[in-house]
Amino acid sequence: MRFRRLLLFSVLMSGASLVLIGCNGSSAVSGSTTGSPTTGSSTTGSAPSSTVAYVYVSSWPSSSSTAQIVAYAADANGLLTNVPGSPFSQNVDSMAASGGYLLGASNSQADINSYMIGSNGALTLASQFALTQQTGSQVSASNGGTCGGAGGFLFDPTGKTLYTEISNFNCSSNNAIDSFAFDSSKGSLSYLGNANIGFQASAAISFLGNDAYAYSALYDSCMYGGLTPFSRSNTGLLSGNQADQTPTYGPPAPPGATSSGVKLPSYSAGLTATDTTNHVAIGEYPCYALNGVVATDLQLAAYTADASGNLTTTDTYATMPKTTINPQDLQMSPSGSVLAVGGEGGLQVFHFNGASSITSFGNVLTTDGISQMFWDNSNHLYAITMTPYGTLGVTSVNPDKLHVFTVTDTSATEATGSPYTVTTPIALAVQPE
Image (tube, rainbow, N blue to C red; front, side, top):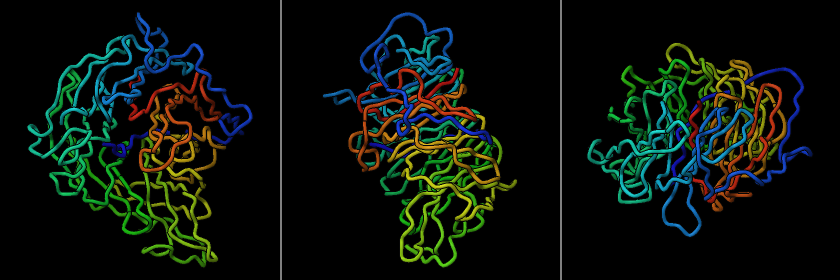
């Protein structure tokens, strides 16, 4: 079973002219994997001394009924080498990493598996959390069952709390977000409680820098979608709150626009991403037609949160940059100045400028369909492609790939050796060093 991941955080800004290299440009890296790791290969020994992150991809090998974890060590230039013992025969779906542990949703039973990350990036099973028994909820394994399983793993910014989406919560057809306290000394979890988010809501949440508020949004063709705000208690428990969004229906549409949905002619909030302070990027889907033509391109708005989590924006239809990408993931860089948009149509980055409008960074870096992305702390952005059938029912261009990009305030290039071949990637997790 696949889930829209719970969204992370990060980003970069600038004003200089940019040198962008991507698959749409004339200077794109070829992507040859000669001498670089592919699924099924492995090396021995310890990780390179220049390792800046460990990268984990859960994937379905060809002609296999169980998943595995392909693991890489990334150096300062974004070059990947296989972690000793990779691929690991761990049958997991969604993953998240924190505090030297990798956590994954078991495909074979309703468990959350915790793996210790060794000094060379190798994985050792540390503990298992039985969801059904220890949460009191009806939960099945991630690959199916009477009631939905856990997915969309995300740690809060401190790494002290894990959040997971539970689909078909207690066989109610609603979704929920479970909260777990994470003990980084043992890699173990303690259940805190859940927030029932209903049928239409999304568990793709992103946290403000103060770790007190989070937001999610789910585009549903301009019907009932909107922004869903959450509060995080001192224990880490996530619950809904009543924070406002101003304007209520997103930035103003062009003069003379007419509604193309149930809503007024405006926008419907899609995925969210946050910087390290109090700003939120929201993918805004147009819900209007102009001169009889229905607007289609996603636009990107910047919001500012007050002390109570209420959001406001000064953006309008004229100030928001457009993208032709249908996003499956938004990710901010750790510096809070670059916003990455990945999905059907490829991957594109933008300057994120806090309360000011988001600005263009350049053309798409790849036209491969992207299902999930993460940053490390060394200016690298990792992205996996969609499966041949797409993670959300869309087609995929050039599937079975793991991309690595080096992105700074002034340039974005594909790292040497990228993309790497990974058969049917499911989920991605990154543990910065």
